[in-house]
Length: 318
Image (cartoon, rainbow, N blue to C red):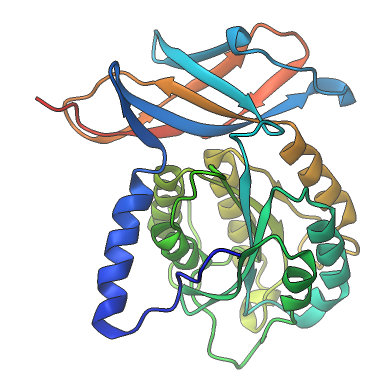
């Protein structure tokens, strides 16, 4: 088990968080003789229900605008250098109806390969309370899951604050460079409400992309007024879809009610995790640090490459 890195107090908390953020911000970047190298997790998805074929490095094309970036490496998920840390994030303001799916989540945890470290956290007031740090102990991770606190607990805030919080505090683990999250939430932003451009969603996307985190999400109804608001829940699902799409993940829901069974979603998620690669490529040098849009494609027929839509590129040293 890795040592805990989430217990911080007072001024020490600010110092540790800032230092961890600077480290995490470099998670998707490394330096080489040819410039900066960007890393991202890519899922291979077959069309028409086919089994995803093996994709080779020479089959992968990374475009920035009209230019091709150099592909440095392409390591399959089963490879020795593509291990994973997987974090389950539960919105503590969710309806306690989530209790009927806890056994599905425990089965998912127990089905993950032994090389994957599992963590469990609960989103509260815009932060994340880690109740199980990353571990190979499947029994401990599964047992740590509990019912959300629900209405009246004073825990409701923006789930996107919580994602940004954990993205800035998540320490890199070179042995397990893939970092992925499953968020269980309604996606409703109690601070912003609804509308086409939520700045907190945009910030969460940027923080996740910068830290190299792929975000999956399952819609779970909230509590209070938001549970009955078509307007808020519609935007919540849109926000979750945007977040997952921009970071290379998937978002799952079935109407605005609680899902009867998480198993189909979790089976699809497990399938994606098994068909991933860790991509390293050299982006175009930039005079000013910022996000650059990238597009991945392959000449292999019948498949798509699912990946983050942008990569953070630091400024080129003078």
